Image (cartoon, rainbow, N blue to C red; front, side, top):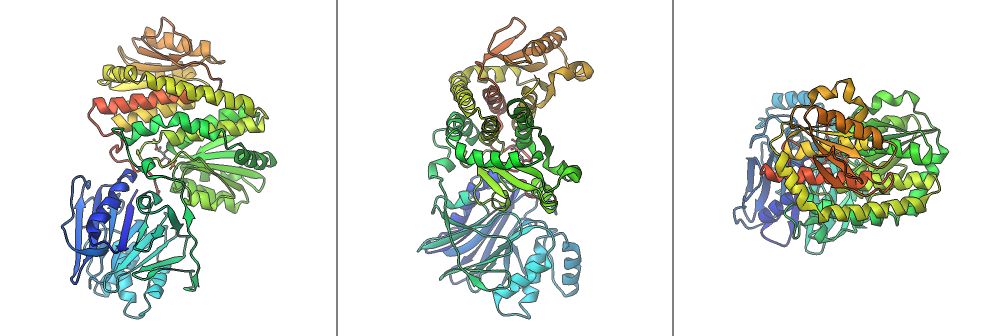
Length: 585
Ligand code: F6R
């Protein structure tokens, strides 16, 4: 969701650098943007615009400090006035905010009574005015920020820029803030990805601690204002991972990275063994995720049961709080999340923790909230995922869960062999990418696309439909094949594309029957199987890799979604209305 980038350093084109920083965060999804810089020997300059940064350039002012923000609207529409930064009445406080100030209405009324004039409809703007108000009573700016932050309810991350003294203060109790400092420049951002072009040594700000960044360096304080030491970590990410390179879009680049990610994960068996040991000590096991990560969790239910003979329940993050009755201190709850910041998961997990459950996190982002706060964390290591829709993180999640199931079953060798076969099949599908592009061009005018699967191919069908609809806006639905006759079949019309997952497992014959049933109603049947069949109008071969066949199968839907988006002239990296990391409820 919202992105933040603040710069303080020797370079004199701060406006341009901040725009570049914000561009590197565009993948998070946003609908307006703004930048405030302190012009040399002059006043503050603020630019705010609805829409995307696009080809925008920054006026060539000489400036060595400033702050920018990309906003994903919650309180107040998409307008220039509602975009951040927000500036206090006296122009001395510049503020950017991620999150929600739940008590903003009450705070705003009091501030208005005290004579403050509001320029936006946002909850965030109250913070700038509160800071100005508090500065009337307190000269120590760190005290001012700490006091104001205590007045806010809800989860927030703020960076305050005092242009008069060139000081920045960052504090949070939710979404991440990351700092990096070299001899010549310092940066504060909402996402480590924005820091990679500068340095790999970063500091993830813990909740309620205050970071001050000024021209002499950075200082860290605890919530009482006592100074403490600041220890950086080194990110194992190189610049090529945050750039598109030779690919047209991040989505296709990330699809192409998947075979290597699957193989790489098979080397992490020691860390997976630690998770297995903790799970085997517990009485009940739950997976929790949202969107694609939820579908990976649902795959986990099938894999745990079939391979490890362990019962697992999976829940959407947003529904998990309604399932808490059976959670106790003998339960383990595993959060499955690319970003590690999804608020629906975090809030559900907080309640499970209060009931004594062991919390595990399967995440892709080092330093993320779930990574830091879980009792045991596993880093997927898929590298930064910059397309809004999840591809490689989903594949990494299934791969890790698959290995976990085999670890608990003491069949890691068999699991590893299946995964290597799955990686080989991904490569083989990518060699046939052109045929999937042609298929996309053939079905691009369809109003609906359906995907059918049974067993583990059912969550695979759900994920495939999500991948298609979110990037090309064609209505797509995944169904359990056995549900056809219970209503779904009413949706089939002449020419409706129906993708049938037909792997060589216990679902083979029944899935084939579903293919015949939809074909009899005029469907255009796209069969994904190791064996061709006359019922298929289009056939995509995927060789059998045991339960791991789900992985290459889903890659086909990723490619189909990508090429459908291209056929409709849409940008697959930035689907409308979607944000990469969903940090508000
Ligand atoms: C779909 C997609 C979303 C995310 C979901 C969870 O392509 O990207 O459905 O999977 O928002 O996000 P994380 O995994 O960051 O918790």
